[in-house]
Length: 454
Ligand code: GDL
Image 1 (cartoon, helix red, strand yellow):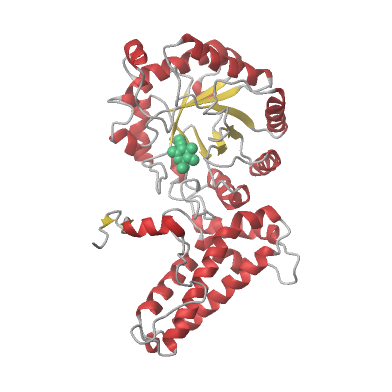
Image 2 (tube, rainbow, N blue to C red):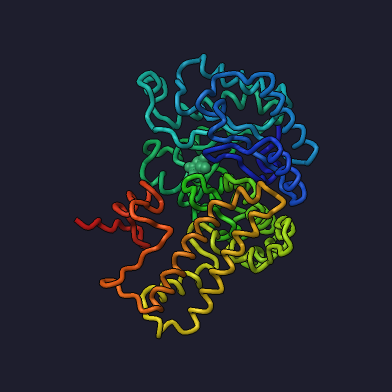
């Protein structure tokens, strides 16, 4: 059996988001890119593969298993470890031996298809147990650890198979809130078999920063290095957003504190080029980590994929504007920040005070309008489909702003001559019900609720 120290550092991708899973051909393409980038791990656990979570007890059909076998083989060819994840936590009865039997059956099905590495995921489940389970185990941590330990010792450890365990509180905020029960993480640290790895997403589910100090404290509790399940680029929780920015907010020293770094990225497969490229650069970096520099060189590598059927293609400056507008969850890119500042000033100030902002903003608006058109002409149609919603929305908004600028410049006056747009006739509402609800319950930049006007 391999000792923990000899296990390889995990670097790669988790297909672990909610919503439409990637297609088989996208996965195969991902594996090819991973090989080029020197990434060694792919974890298959799309939340909405029914048999991963909702129907975890059911066997895969021969066809389904064949598709998984194809991925496992492709991983083998590309030097990537295929991990299969199962998430029984929504309905499992921990104390019922038939349930463990069903988990075993699934592991055997996958083992038969060539898989040796697994993950058992207890994230995003209620932290309560049925009465019988409480009587049998006393704590959720114990119930989950015993389930994982028995799978590991009976099936995986003997064949050098690996297992990663995702705890119910998988970030610091959840642990601080007592999710999973008091002392959950310490108990998992003690009970979980030594060879099993543990996932962690950082201080938050979506962590802006992950520090070595924070991980150091956690390591003590878990009695092992955690494996980072990094949601920095995940967008399944807000589908109006997409994250094209670089891997950042983590110091390179973090690599020594964790057993691996796996990215659970954007649902839109094609949107993940920069995320993966910069993760790979981060993993290989020496000295300090320059995320902006890595971003800029990743964009240059991404650009050829934006070739169009039209004469004028997407330029690097276009791509940077796009990437900056859809950068990272907690941060806009530089060009987007500037655009926002210009709009804010122009909306609030009279035209006499606009100065150089006016020309700069009009130029950016023109660029976004043109970019939206160029994207419709991309040869890579999946890339267009991945970005179209966001770019469409941005263009609509900016065109509206330009109309407003024109109206202001022409001496617009709210009382006598209110601003209207032909795009927003009476009775239409941008963003529909959700946007209206957001206006009732909105939060300031400090994260505090702004009370709705009575
Ligand atoms: C989560 C889920 C993950 C989801 C992500 C972002 C973990 C361990 N689980 O909480 O499936 O994609 O948030 O919404 O991160």
